[in-house]
View 1 (cartoon, rainbow, N blue to C red):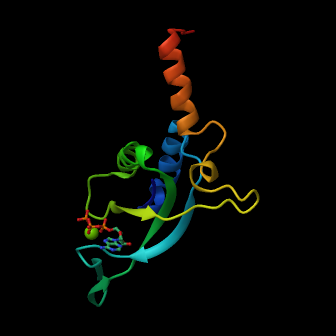
View 2 (cartoon, rainbow, N blue to C red; view 1 turned 45 degrees about the horizontal axis):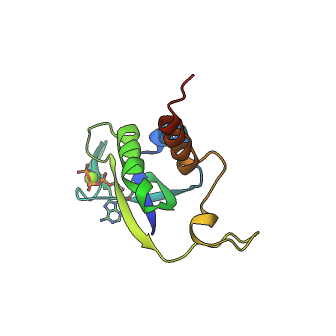
Length: 136
Ligand SMILES: Nc1ncnc2c1ncn2[C@@H]1O[C@H](COP(=O)(O)OP(=O)(O)OP(=O)(O)O)[C@@H](O)[C@H]1O
Ligand SMILES: [Mg+2]
Protein backbone atom coordinates (compact mmCIF):
# COMPACT_ATOMS: atom_id res chain seq x y z
CA UNK A 1 0.00 0.00 0.00
CA UNK A 2 1.04 3.58 -0.57
CA UNK A 3 0.97 6.48 1.88
CA UNK A 4 1.49 10.22 1.80
CA UNK A 5 3.48 11.85 4.57
CA UNK A 6 2.71 15.54 4.97
CA UNK A 7 5.21 17.10 7.36
CA UNK A 8 4.83 20.75 8.37
CA UNK A 9 7.80 22.20 10.24
CA UNK A 10 10.13 25.18 10.74
CA UNK A 11 11.60 26.65 7.53
CA UNK A 12 15.11 26.69 9.00
CA UNK A 13 14.96 22.90 9.41
CA UNK A 14 14.36 22.19 5.73
CA UNK A 15 17.98 21.59 4.77
CA UNK A 16 18.62 19.31 7.75
CA UNK A 17 15.45 17.31 7.05
CA UNK A 18 16.25 16.97 3.33
CA UNK A 19 19.80 15.82 4.07
CA UNK A 20 18.66 13.28 6.67
CA UNK A 21 16.09 11.88 4.25
CA UNK A 22 18.59 11.71 1.44
CA UNK A 23 20.90 9.71 3.71
CA UNK A 24 18.32 6.95 4.13
CA UNK A 25 17.40 6.95 0.43
CA UNK A 26 14.16 8.92 0.42
CA UNK A 27 14.35 10.65 -2.95
CA UNK A 28 11.03 11.85 -4.37
CA UNK A 29 9.51 14.77 -2.51
CA UNK A 30 7.68 18.02 -2.87
CA UNK A 31 8.07 21.16 -0.75
CA UNK A 32 5.73 24.10 -0.26
CA UNK A 33 5.77 27.25 1.77
CA UNK A 34 2.69 27.41 3.95
CA UNK A 35 1.33 29.59 6.71
CA UNK A 36 -0.67 28.24 9.56
CA UNK A 37 -1.06 27.66 13.23
CA UNK A 38 -1.53 24.75 15.58
CA UNK A 39 -3.13 24.59 18.98
CA UNK A 40 -1.74 27.87 20.35
CA UNK A 41 -3.39 29.71 17.47
CA UNK A 42 -0.26 31.73 16.64
CA UNK A 43 1.96 33.89 18.82
CA UNK A 44 1.64 37.14 20.77
CA UNK A 45 4.26 39.71 19.90
CA UNK A 46 5.09 42.80 21.97
CA UNK A 47 5.18 46.01 19.91
CA UNK A 48 5.40 49.74 20.73
CA UNK A 49 1.63 50.09 20.94
CA UNK A 50 1.14 46.95 23.01
CA UNK A 51 0.88 43.30 22.11
CA UNK A 52 -0.57 41.93 18.91
CA UNK A 53 -1.20 38.47 17.62
CA UNK A 54 0.41 36.90 14.56
CA UNK A 55 -1.98 34.07 13.86
CA UNK A 56 -0.50 32.63 10.66
CA UNK A 57 3.15 31.67 10.96
CA UNK A 58 5.38 30.63 8.07
CA UNK A 59 6.27 26.94 7.87
CA UNK A 60 7.36 24.52 5.16
CA UNK A 61 5.29 21.56 4.09
CA UNK A 62 7.13 18.53 2.80
CA UNK A 63 5.10 15.88 0.99
CA UNK A 64 6.45 12.41 0.35
CA UNK A 65 4.56 9.56 -1.30
CA UNK A 66 6.08 6.24 -0.32
CA UNK A 67 5.42 2.58 0.40
CA UNK A 68 3.81 1.63 3.69
CA UNK A 69 6.86 -0.18 4.99
CA UNK A 70 8.99 2.99 4.76
CA UNK A 71 6.60 5.27 6.64
CA UNK A 72 7.78 4.75 10.24
CA UNK A 73 11.47 5.16 9.43
CA UNK A 74 10.76 8.30 7.45
CA UNK A 75 8.65 9.81 10.24
CA UNK A 76 11.41 9.05 12.74
CA UNK A 77 14.03 10.76 10.57
CA UNK A 78 11.87 13.85 9.96
CA UNK A 79 11.03 14.15 13.65
CA UNK A 80 14.68 13.85 14.68
CA UNK A 81 15.85 16.42 12.16
CA UNK A 82 13.02 18.96 12.63
CA UNK A 83 12.71 18.93 16.41
CA UNK A 84 13.91 21.76 18.64
CA UNK A 85 11.72 20.85 21.62
CA UNK A 86 9.98 24.24 21.61
CA UNK A 87 6.34 24.97 20.88
CA UNK A 88 5.67 25.20 17.16
CA UNK A 89 8.03 22.44 15.96
CA UNK A 90 5.34 21.20 13.60
CA UNK A 91 3.18 18.23 12.84
CA UNK A 92 3.14 15.17 10.58
CA UNK A 93 0.05 13.77 8.88
CA UNK A 94 -0.12 10.40 7.12
CA UNK A 95 -2.73 9.71 4.43
CA UNK A 96 -3.58 6.70 2.28
CA UNK A 97 -2.79 7.16 -1.43
CA UNK A 98 -5.01 5.58 -4.07
CA UNK A 99 -2.69 5.48 -7.06
CA UNK A 100 0.58 6.81 -8.48
CA UNK A 101 1.22 7.13 -12.22
CA UNK A 102 4.53 8.26 -13.68
CA UNK A 103 3.55 10.37 -16.66
CA UNK A 104 6.58 9.60 -18.86
CA UNK A 105 6.33 5.82 -18.68
CA UNK A 106 2.82 5.08 -17.49
CA UNK A 107 4.26 3.01 -14.63
CA UNK A 108 1.90 2.67 -11.71
CA UNK A 109 2.04 1.98 -8.00
CA UNK A 110 5.34 0.76 -6.57
CA UNK A 111 7.06 0.90 -9.95
CA UNK A 112 6.18 4.56 -10.26
CA UNK A 113 7.75 5.13 -6.84
CA UNK A 114 11.00 3.25 -7.47
CA UNK A 115 14.13 5.39 -7.80
CA UNK A 116 17.72 4.43 -8.46
CA UNK A 117 19.53 3.94 -5.14
CA UNK A 118 16.41 4.53 -3.09
CA UNK A 119 15.53 3.22 0.36
CA UNK A 120 14.21 -0.10 -1.03
CA UNK A 121 17.22 -0.70 -3.26
CA UNK A 122 19.47 -0.06 -0.26
CA UNK A 123 17.48 -2.46 1.88
CA UNK A 124 17.79 -5.17 -0.77
CA UNK A 125 21.54 -4.63 -0.95
CA UNK A 126 21.89 -4.80 2.84
CA UNK A 127 19.78 -7.97 2.99
CA UNK A 128 21.90 -9.52 0.28
CA UNK A 129 25.12 -8.64 2.05
CA UNK A 130 23.77 -10.09 5.29
CA UNK A 131 22.54 -13.25 3.56
CA UNK A 132 25.88 -14.07 1.95
CA UNK A 133 27.91 -12.63 4.79
CA UNK A 134 30.02 -10.34 2.61
CA UNK A 135 31.50 -7.23 4.11
CA UNK A 136 34.20 -4.86 3.04
N1 LIG B 1 -4.74 20.39 12.81
C1 LIG B 1 -3.98 20.93 11.87
N2 LIG B 1 -4.36 20.89 10.58
C2 LIG B 1 -3.58 21.44 9.60
N3 LIG B 1 -2.40 22.01 9.82
C3 LIG B 1 -1.97 22.07 11.08
C4 LIG B 1 -2.72 21.54 12.17
N4 LIG B 1 -2.02 21.73 13.30
C5 LIG B 1 -0.88 22.35 12.94
N5 LIG B 1 -0.85 22.56 11.61
C6 LIG B 1 0.21 23.16 10.85
O1 LIG B 1 1.43 22.83 11.50
C7 LIG B 1 2.15 24.00 11.84
C8 LIG B 1 2.92 23.81 13.10
O2 LIG B 1 2.01 23.57 14.14
P1 LIG B 1 2.50 23.49 15.65
O3 LIG B 1 3.89 22.99 15.66
O4 LIG B 1 2.21 24.78 16.34
O5 LIG B 1 1.53 22.33 16.17
P2 LIG B 1 0.95 22.15 17.62
O6 LIG B 1 0.01 21.00 17.53
O7 LIG B 1 0.41 23.46 18.10
O8 LIG B 1 2.22 21.70 18.47
P3 LIG B 1 3.04 22.58 19.56
O9 LIG B 1 2.30 22.48 20.83
O10 LIG B 1 4.39 21.95 19.59
O11 LIG B 1 3.09 23.99 19.04
C9 LIG B 1 1.11 25.08 11.88
O12 LIG B 1 1.69 26.34 11.64
C10 LIG B 1 0.17 24.67 10.76
O13 LIG B 1 0.73 25.08 9.53
MG1 LIG C 1 1.65 25.12 18.23
